[in-house]
Image (cartoon, rainbow, N blue to C red):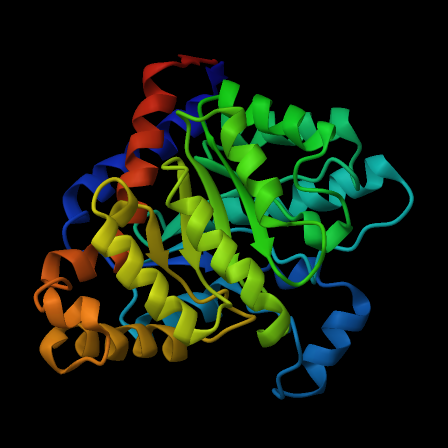
Length: 343
């Protein structure tokens, strides 16, 4: 692997900052800012029509930073918004559309290196496998992204297909971290499929965003929620981002993972899924939940009553940002340690 000079400088700057703030930083682990210049005409028209929310209504980088400030969130892991990037029948045109969306994330991070952790996006179905692999290379080698995501639910392909596994292999070979939308909203991301992905490289982290949530019906999603918790406690390389998931299950996840000890208690992180969720709402809720969990003797869960100090300040800060910061720092060190530099 050969990093561009731009990529190396971005990684080094990010790593320096994270090293300085790792013990205090609050990170939203799932944010989707968009460049308004890339809005499709129908999206631009709906935004111009007024401020009322609709599902997937995009936010700009500027709007994201403003809400982070309101919510007391220091940094956000950012990737493109699939509601804005539209695909057609032409694989190369799809590649270019997604390249532009990823390029915005790169430029947004360069302009705000202490606020934004950039992550890439690829799609072996919409782009074709060769283009999907090239997108991974661009994201990691040219822009220095530590994470590259796929969304099997969005474009209807199995999370453990041969093509996905080939893309995962490429991401791992470049020393970055593969990430997935992992939800109960479609049949394309079952828990057993995620487990097969995790077993592909059992010593390498894989991020599963939503921990089985992501828009599924509460009753139907319950099976995936429970399975997600179980496989994560079997596979220590799975890192879960808690966004777009029912609050009662989030509470159970937090208790189960914290009680399980290392490495599992370090494999979970708070997030909002903005613009699909509000940062202010979600991080206010996380803080309120942690305040209740910290008062373990008064909680109705017998596990907390037996471990009243389980959610101490350090544990809470880790979930609110430290765990994800460490994952990114470890990845950045791996990228810098195993890469040459292009001119």
